[in-house]
Amino acid sequence: MYALYPVPTIVSAAILLATRFLGVPLPAAPPNCWWELFDADWEDVWSVCGHVMRLYRPRPLEDQTRVLGMVSKKGVRQWLEEN
Image 1: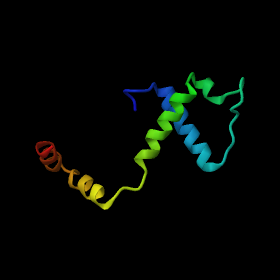
Image 2: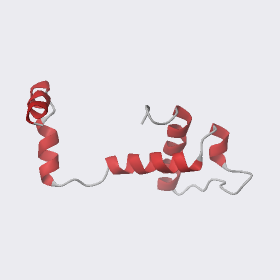
Image 3: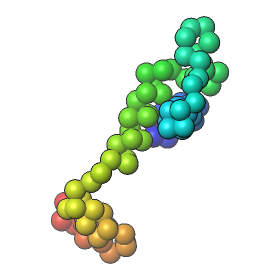
Image 4: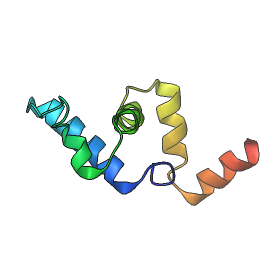
């Protein structure tokens, strides 16, 4: 994410996800859009939220097993050689 979006946009996405999870309303009607305090664009904030949420989606057992196999350097090297 850090290579694609500036830090204020990532921070804004974290704030949005946290407040939605906690049910805390934030002002979103112009001219009082809270993300503008961080100089972030709404589309970018929403996009970062989507990327973060995809990280936490349920994974099939096959994917979980593959990731656990790459926990060591040896596992990563083996995966790189095979792919």
